Amino acid sequence: MALTISNLSKTYPNGVRALKNVSLTIGNNMFGLLGPNGAGKSSLMRTVATLQDPDSGAISLDGIDVLKQKTEVRKVLGYLPQEFGVYPKLSAIDMLNHLAVLKGVTSAGERKEMVEALLQQTNLWDVRKKALSTYSGGMKQRFGIAQALLANPRLIIVDEPTAGLDPAERNRFLNLLASIGRDVTVILSTHIVDDVHELCSRMAIIANGEVLLEGVPSESLKALEGQMWSRVVATDDELRALEAQHHVISTHLAGGLHEVRVFSSTSPGDGFQPVAAGLEDVYFLHLSRHGKN
Image 1 (cartoon, helix red, strand yellow):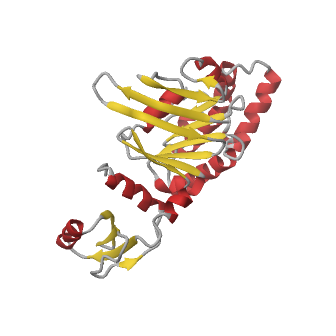
Image 2 (cartoon, helix red, strand yellow):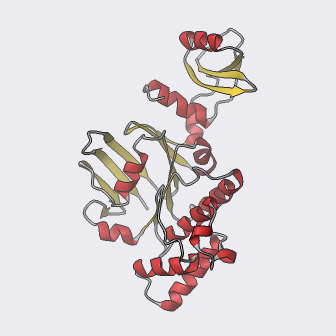
Image 3 (cartoon, helix red, strand yellow):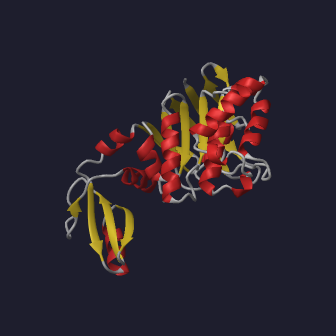
């Protein structure tokens, strides 16, 4: 499975430039698309999912022209948007059966086997007959994955899937995605750095509609070795002074104190200590270099 996105651009009628010559190559793996809210991630995912057309550019999926052969793409695509609607009074099993018919699974026996297997895989079997309106946020997201997996798709797109989930549901959902990602190509679009760090073998950082970085997370971390420094300060004045003197890429509050993280090839002095780089450092560094944070 190979998805190639070439020079994709999109400007909405209100003048917002959502995508600016975006090019990405996504192979058969779990691919993380990381960026802040409003970065253009959802616009890109909707375009790949054939829900909107770009102004220019091309997308190819294993030889299929995504922009011209939308019906062919939809046969092999599973999509979990950031917000998706369901019939609230329907049960999970009835809704999946209905969606399976729409996906072209006309054999009752095949449909029954597929729906029951997906309910087991997403750990919804015990609540399969309950109305979807009674589901928790995490259960609804797992149902969203179940519907995305109908008809054995080769490409799955999930857009901000863990936003708003509590820690336990987030772990369940990430474990589910990890198991799925062994067999198909999964694009995980998110602003949560830890989701990409835990799941994805390749990633891209996008902001203001532009790709800032594409590569392997471990290689991006290696590039920062020996160049990350940390210092704790107590006051806002000290923080502002450090921001004026150094390349501060992020600050975190801990116990009322500011942890300041600085990118520098040599020691910044002033009480800074060397620290191991994390994927969040990679993320904030590239945003700061492009004036996006």
